[in-house]
Each structure stands twice: as structure tokens, then as C-alpha cells.
Image (cartoon, rainbow, N blue to C red):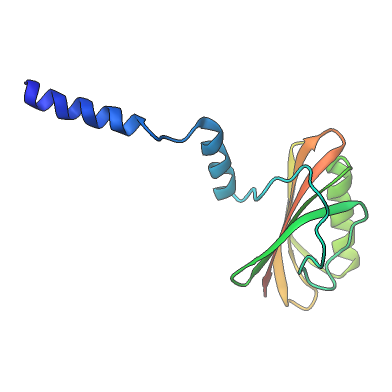
Length: 146
């Protein structure tokens, strides 16, 4: 019995070492769930975001990072505006630019998503908004070739 108990005990102890903390698990789950990056502060990036030229430009957004991963362009930032206001401004801006809103959803003042396709069908993606606090909202935008 001792010969089988010792290896089992050793495996149990090693399995507990190096495990991920609860906060790290939550961040990974959020990223896998399509939430994207949550950015609530930071300095404005220099240069262009890489988003399409006709992508709606909403006043008051500070873009902090932008990256190209394969064909997908992402831009992350924040706005000193409530989530509801920013959500409505993106909806209006997309309609004004002739974009098609494929799907949109807002969960109270917690988060919102707007899935879109460009007027000329050259790109599509999603705008993910996350509440930082009552007067600040995180913005995560993805854009892929159509």
C-alpha cells in the first residue's frame, strides 16, 4: 500500500504547484469568450490604428495599442464616457458610414458588442465595449478582411 500511496501523493502535490491563480484563469476565460482586451487607462499611441479609413471615428477615444495578427487588425483603448453613450455613438457612426450591423447587444452598463460589416464588404469585425467605471469605457475593436 505504501508503494502506491507515495506516488499518488507526489503526483497530487506536483499538480498543485505552479497552478494558475483565480484572476489569471478569469482573464484567460474572458479572452477565449470573445471579450477581448480590457483597457481602462494608458497613454495615447502614436501613429494610425490600422482600422479601415472609413471606420467610424468617435470623439474622445484614446487608443493605447494597435496590432496586426495575421489578417486581423485590433485596436484597444478607452473613452471617458459611459458605456451606453459610447454604444449609441458607435451604432450611429456605423449607420452613417453605411456599415451593416450584423449583431448588437448591450447588457445594462456592464458590456456591449456590435458586430459589423463595411459598406463595400471589404472588412468585418466587432466593437467590444466594457465598463471600467461609471464614466469610463474600454474599447476593443477587431477588423478582418471581408
